[in-house]
Image (cartoon, rainbow, N blue to C red; front, side, top):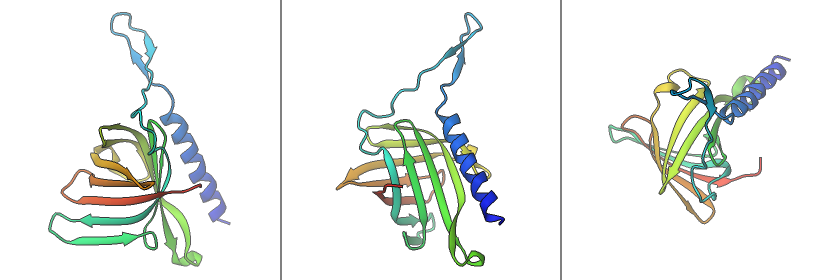
Length: 167
């Protein structure tokens, strides 16, 4: 019975955060002192990257030279991209729940994509320290798959391959 309220809370958080992230910001006009609407621009004219993506392969090269390779059997990550916003959801198998997957990490915000340079600005997350994250990737599309390679603020290099999913 504890699982149902948890799922409802997580879904409410995601819906609320996504709605908040898509609300136009108000900017204070210095000359009049009044708030004015700021219109968000589409991050990219090319929208092939927009959609829901499932991580199928991940390679992390740590600063010390060690390499970790994972795939969708061990890392359960979804990335949702609109023309201006992103949401990342990570699930984990919970042994106490017969290995049922539940959301363990969620984050989102806005991003820019210019000439293949993708930068995330995390506005909310279910973990501490997200405000200091500096996420920069090179994003490419090849054969319908989304490929990213870059850093999240440290020396470690993340290379990820995603496939489009209907979810």
